[in-house]
Length: 479
Image (tube, rainbow, N blue to C red; front, side, top):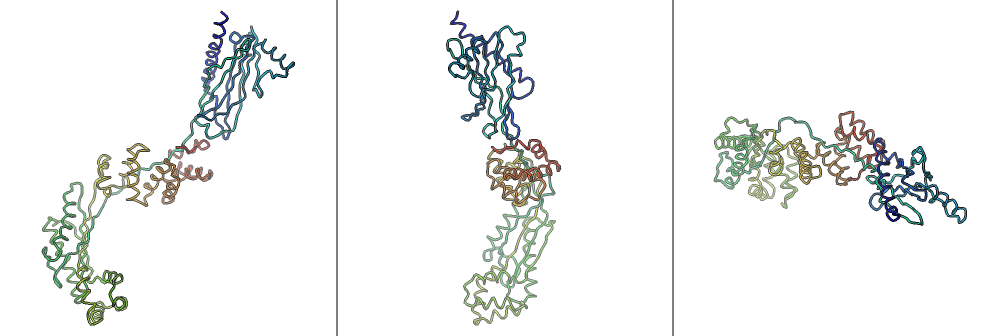
C-alpha cells in the first residue's frame, strides 16, 4: 500500500494543477503578456490540503522559454505543516534555507482548513522583454519532495503562450482600371529609290527585305482580332543631293508611294494616315561624319555647322578635295538617308487575369500596370510567380508608383531593405505608398515619422496603415 500511495500523489497533483490553470485561463486574462519593454507574468496556483500531505513540499518554477532560450523566474513553494517545521528546525540547526533562495512565496498547507483559498497564491512578476521571447511559452516546472527524501519531477505544464511577433501590414497596390490602352509598333525601313525618283520598286537594291519587315509588322497587327488600328504614321526622308525644293517634293512622293503600297497590299483604305517629311536629313549625315574617319571630316562638319542655306551647304561639300569626299558620301551614306519611318498605332482591350497569365510572357507590352498588378495579386504572396510579374511591371513601368511600391513590398518580405528603399524613393510622393514608407521609417528607427506616415495613409483609406497604427507598439520585422 505504501508503495502504491507513493506514486499516486504526483498524478493527483498534476491533474489538480491543470484544472487550476485552465480555470484561470477561462477568465480571459493571459498568464504571460508583453507590455512595452517588459514581459509580465501573472497566474494563480494552489494546493488543496487533501492532495499535499503534511510531510511534502511542492516547488513550482515558472520558466519563459523558446527553443534553446529560457529564463527562470522565482519559484513558488507549497509546504505541508510537518515539512514546514522540519525546514525551520534545519535552518536553525544547520543554516539550511527552509525554501529555495529568491522564492516568490511560501504557502504552508494545513489539513482540515475550511477555506481552500488560503492555500492559493497569486503570482505576479515581470522581466525585461527580449526578441526571442515572442512566440515562446510560459512553462511551470514542478518538483515534489516527499517523506524520507523521496523526490519526483512531475511533467511540466504549459501555462500560456507568448504572443507571436506582430508583423506590420504591407500595402500591395492594385490601381483602378485606367483609360484605353493605346500602343504603337514602329520600324525604320531603308526603302531604296533610284536617285531622284519616288517609284517604289520591290526588286530594287535591298527593298525586298525591307518591305518584308513592313509586311510582317502590318500582318501581325491586322490579324490580331483583339487589336483595333487607330493610326498609321509615315515619315519620309531624302538625302541632300539636288535642290531643297526638289527634295521636298521627292520626300513627300516617296511617303505617298509607301502609303499606296499599304492600302493596296493590306486594304488599309479607311485607315487614318499621318505623314511627315524631312526633305534633307542633315542631322543623320552629321552624326555619321562625326564618328567617321574621313580625311576631310572637320571640313565637312564646319560646312554643316556654319552654312545655313541647304543648297549652298551641298555645293560647299562638293568642292572639298575636288569632290572626293562628296563622292564617298554619295556612295556610302546618302542611300541610307533615303528611308521611311513606319509606325502603326492600335488600341488594346482589357484582358482577364487568365489572359494576362499568357500575355505576361508573350506580349507583356500589351498589359497595363493595373492588369499586371491584378495578375500579381492572384498569386500567393511569396510565390516566384508574383515576384516575376512584379519584376516585369517595374521593367515596363519603372516610374509608376504602384510598380515601385509593390516591388518594395516584395523586397521587405525578402529582408532586402536596400531594394525596398530604392523603390520607395521613386514613389515617395504618392500617398498610396505612405504605409510602406512608414514601415521603412520603423526599420530605420524613426518611430515619429513612421507613425505620421501610418496616420496619413490611414486617413487616405489604407486599412493596412490603420492596422499598423493599432498595433504600433508591438510591430516587429521578422519575416
